[in-house]
Image (cartoon, rainbow, N blue to C red; front, side, top):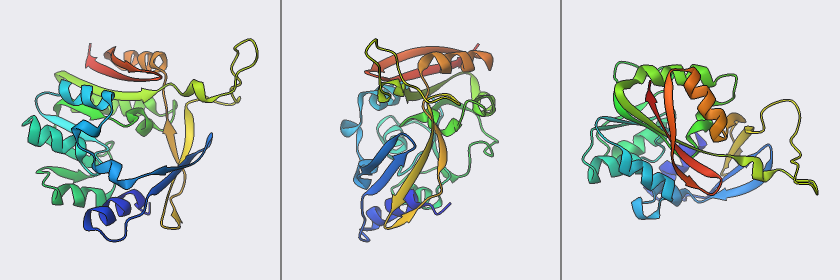
Length: 234
């Protein structure tokens, strides 16, 4: 991993000639991601993010923390004991420089030793699951990180709307796998990361997987094709 997301976050924080990130997927063209967006405050966040941050309570874990904006809000505005977790070394360095008290650079599958009352996975949190084939691995891990009365707050988008429809309303979906399994590529300053697997989940599919792994699940917020789900232990 070249850690291009982390490099962009580092450059922006240190004002070292930052540029916008570019992202693309196997079903979408190149798109600009302004790096300053990763440093947004609560008022600039979307409704799903705001809802999740308001629902957070107790000891919290922010998985995929990035530049740490969600963590900072929980730490400074909600006064929660919160840990930022990300696989990007430079992102975690910036988190610490921004004043985050607890920040760890590690893959969530390797992280252990603590349990939490609230676990956050935001900005299409299901993406980290990679594919339907691996979703049970991640949900089992999350189960071990969650306190008995805790909650997981995770968002995703049903991307069925991105596929063409015929005159009768049927959807043209490529054969060979679940339509939410995508290849995701990040570009920054003429460099490109290797493609990673990224998973968008419709709520029904997430619900089935969650229930098969010992969770109860409810949809707590819907915003067009995107939603926020709350998972608790049965």
